[in-house]
Image (cartoon, rainbow, N blue to C red; front, top):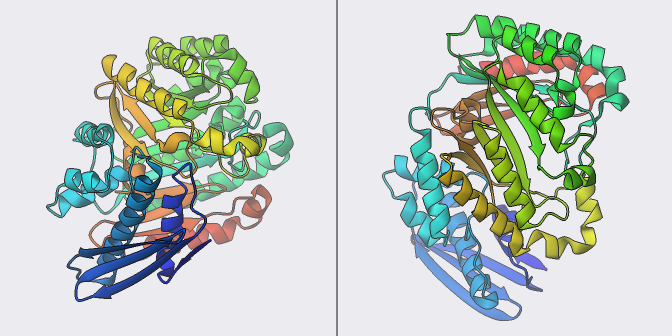
Length: 466
């Protein structure tokens, strides 16, 4: 049972409590602010704790930021001391530690000092420092910068770990002709809302689940926006699973100026691929690389730490094999068990063991060491709720191969104009310190039925505050 007199902190404090293997039966939190002092009192399973922290605040936003920080740190400290556990990210539960680091730097403060106070591990503080270093020359906070995202929510099959709205394409193909018409309509209207275009990202789902003709329709819809922008715009297609690769699709991407693709095996274990519902083999992964090599794309590979029954040895083998492909970027995701994923349902009884087993952290730490030794540097990271081992997702890159889109989206420094079903657009006002969002409908049928309304609402959304 949890109670607090500070409503905006309820979910934040619950997130802190969920970090630990052991869970308190009752938590009572009481907050008061007295003459510049933040007073947080806790009663946890009958034991009382009191904390006082001084902080100067100039507005309500800063007041809430300080109170959130002090209350979370207090609760984390109590539970960590009671249960003898330390988390890799300490009392930080937000998804963007790097963004917090930039905020501290811009305010003239040391993010290292803050992270140490929040009891973040030394290894993770070094990770943040390395990411900020790699982002130099790419990171840019400038109002009007824009990234374009195109949603293709179709896949060959639905993976066991996936909580997205995607369904096997054979079950949703009936919507595809209308969906592509709507997408082209959105793209035609989107041009007026694009500021300084930095990147285009066609993602999913699995864009290569489309036929060559269908994929060409999408690329033709994007082409006028690319052509009207300055030269050198980064252009990514998340090609996806190796079993849907073909020479024709790769040649088509090259024809339309695509510069980057993603090959997403998630693992180099045939046994695991079968268990998570993939319809391809490790041999297919290598064939996808062989097909792609001649076109000169920058290639990203996705891996997931914590897939069904994998041992640290299995995952470490996948990291080595990903490196051997010559991939320019390797993204190491840490499994997040979300509602709607079959894997979450299958492991419900073992949730406690699976979510918090130390072998996942061994996978993550090993990947850092191996990738660093092989010339890769971390360039972006983010965290999710319900990640195994309370770890994170990190993108690694060879020199000068970092993805602009990933950096802009994760650091929230530029507008994201997103089209398609379940696409979330963002307006980022760096000077005002404000971010607003506009989401399209998730359901394909509802999206198609409301396309004109979506286009008009997004047009107005991007005109606000201009």
